[in-house]
Length: 381
Image (cartoon, rainbow, N blue to C red; front, side, top):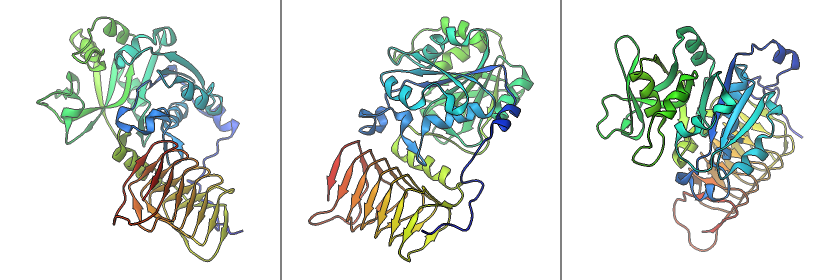
């Protein structure tokens, strides 16, 4: 069995109980919204919650929970919808993160402000951080929460500049640094400052949610609720994203998030390696995985009981638990648990393969293959 010379401290993070006890706790609750249907990621989301699609072999939702736990938020509410059983099963009571999770059922997707409105019994009069469950924020929540506590604003919203503001909620900010206007997906944006899926509120937001009406698409918009705060004389402050932020609602964004996470991993190759092909760069391979006569060029992550034989795995690829890859080449892709890629003689790139899917080759082939497969699907090329 071959192993790497050492384990990079960035590869695997361990936190002792003493570390946890020393971590400051804050008087703030967390609210994660995980009730969306994920229509833009179909067919994957026909069989699974979009928030549970893995990025670097970790469900997207877990990044938000970890970010909250990391700043000392102990009580987290998760707003769930039709996929609540999957999310409850994946997250449990929160004990693995040393937090307490409360599930809040949203009977239908009636908007972000509606999700806030139905969470009042959980939030009570506490300040809270709202985080969209399909978002990943590289630098976590430390800076934005510290800024919120310093400003003593009624709300603080996270913003980033985008080239296509008409696809987002857009904020306008005055010279004093106060948010003066918010518009949801404006046809003619007056700013390129888009709302990121992280918001900090005090109890005034509930008054706002009670005083707005559904938008043209039949939803209670969080932009309208925040605008109510502004017009009512409450203070709303902006904060700009440090590092990167990704909304993983579409395939290309999902792959981009996977790339951004993998580019910061370390090296931890614990699995059995047979043959003389190189394992290059930052690669994390579970001790129960098997690599046979294959070249791995990181950054790559390989899950438990994955088996790679006579293949090439290129940069920015996540190989989930139990995946089987034989006689194939793949890069910049996400291969989910139990999927198989067998004897594909064209290099695969930019692929997202769902759980237990099968991709194999037969007959004539095209020169390139790009795919997104739902769970239990099969493709023969």
